[in-house]
Amino acid sequence: MPVAEWVDPDMTTSPSSNVAETSGTAAGPDLPRDVLSGFLVFLIALPLCLGISMASGFPPVAGILTAVIGGLVATWFGSARLTIKGPAAGLIVIALGAVTDLGHGDPALGYRRALAVGVVAAVVQIVFAMVRAGRLGEVFPTHVVHGMLAAIGVIIFSKQAHVMLGVAPHASTPIGLLAELPHSISHLNPEIALVGVLSLGLLFGHLALSQKIPWLRRVPAQLVVLLIAIPLGRAFDLEHPHTYTLSVTHEAYAIGPGFLVNLPASIVSSLGRPDFTGALSADFLKYVVMFALVGSLESLLSARAVDVLDPQRRRSDLDKDLLATGVGNLAAGLLGGLPMISEIVRSSANIGYGARSKLSNFFHGAFLLAFVLLAPGLIHSIPLAALAAMLVFTGVRLASPKEFAHAFHVGPEQLVVFLTTLFVTLATDLLLGVGAGILAKIILQVAMGVRPMDLGRPQIVTTTEHDMPVLRVRGAATFLGLPGLLRGLRALGDAKHAAVELTHTAFVDHTTMERLHEIASEWRREGRTLELRGLDEHRGLSAHPLAARRKRLRPA
Image 1: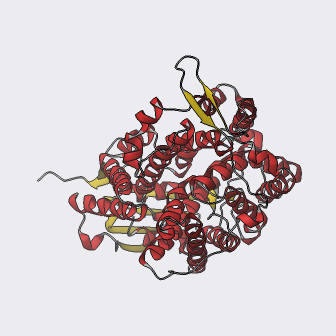
Image 2: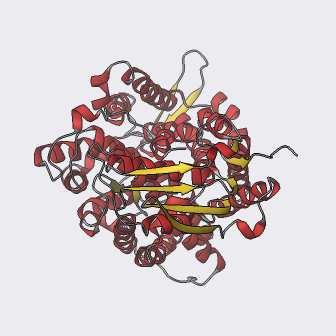
Image 3: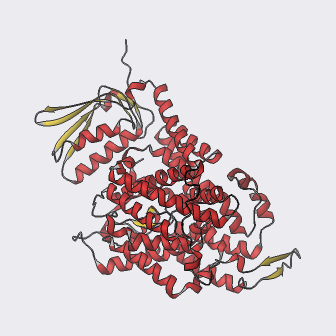
């Protein structure tokens, strides 16, 4: 899947990203545009930060703190120009798991130990950046990532759907929570469910209408939800505990401030400090690896996607962006915030609203800080059901049937990788799910005739043909050997014309096809030419232009 298409699954807003509207001759900051975009992104970020934080088992303000640090601190450490740093739905599963497993029944202790995990993971990310591991995002199998995100979407939906209906479920596993949904629907709290279902309908309605009414794309859907949900919460008097009875069923229901965002009298005192006790335990180290790996991967892929959407086609230094993420996470963990990434939803909105530079990320953080300091009472007025609806919306988009269909369209073997990652993640955890997806991809490639010795070590020879460098690849071109091929391309420097010769490869996988076509597009925008030769000697595993390819068997 091209990087640009990676944006779609988690796109919860639809701001216009029309180049004609956002492009310009200047590549530097445009203060009015950056301030306006920062403000509009702040309107999106506020409810999402609260919802993600609470779903992660952290204090509500922890998510806002992370976005503030992402704007005011990470911006200056080499963050990709138009990315927005902040908490992401994709890390909810890991954060909540860390709080639950490390707290051993004590949520406050689990929160502090999860902060310690975040601090250590941040140091790992900084080390990743120093050793230039940002290129991991260039070679990681796309459908392993998509399977992981789809699993995260299912888990988010399974948990937040009950909150949206005003029901406390008994199950704890994703499968159990999904199985309990019919019970929650039949026992929903009508007033709370009205807020939640109406909020969800507004989000999907905004998404559908914005495709037909262009100006609507500039209205943040989350803001529309809050403008409806907060007055409804006040009309239902959620601030005060009481019961009400439905005239139709004569059944009584209890509501009260427990259905609103709960903020302590002192916001600062609600934030904890990292607790490093048990830092060498297996569970602690597992969550460090998960935060560092999944967070880095999501952030890198988001930064790449944003580069494609940037009207000025500027390329980000992924290692610097990873450094900015690591520094931001270090500060967030020490101060009590959630882990952050370069977040695709807010970043794509940032571009659509006309941002020109990294200052838009700075202003989004500044507006969040000002809101928390000047109007914390408004946060307490937000119904939890509305925040849950926003997360359900995100979960549904992540696990959309379109993702399954797209994987199959690219190739049946990609669907196998996607489903393996998805189901193993649901059955175990993210780390095992990602590992299973990668293993499934390797096994499928060997089954299709790739020699194990060729998986990670293709033979690459650079020759010159009519004054044009040619990289000749033998063996197999797979994601495991892609770093070597990319090094060979980078070694060409600023060559105006070059070619990659794939005639003598037995197999070219989807990840390699995808990356080579991305590089060819990048070169074309720079006025250079990269030819991909020898693909007519291969047969695609599907009709998709970036499908994996096997060498055609010649007739005897």
